[in-house]
Length: 143
Image (spheres, rainbow, N blue to C red):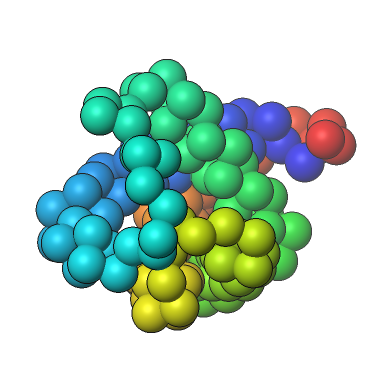
């Protein structure tokens, strides 16, 4: 796998994930998730830890970039499809395991989160595919 393309997709994807995450969860659906919280209290931070959010977004963007590269997605539509499927499955799994073992979210929030992630990761996948299409492969090193 071309490391230049992996890094480019990861950085672009991480930036898109951060911005869309702020828009979706921090702004548009903030009240919805507050209304659908579970019985756990005192678990949210007053203010998030920015560097940890960045690390998480970059790690997920690397996963989506690798999935797009391995799938051979060559168009924005293909990137959106791979991103949406991968993101939905990741977050469906994480959210249900989270729901099974904690009282942070109720079932409504558990179902809504992967649906919103499907939208976010479709957009992220499209962005990654677009930048990868413009980035010529310069090496073929495996990861």
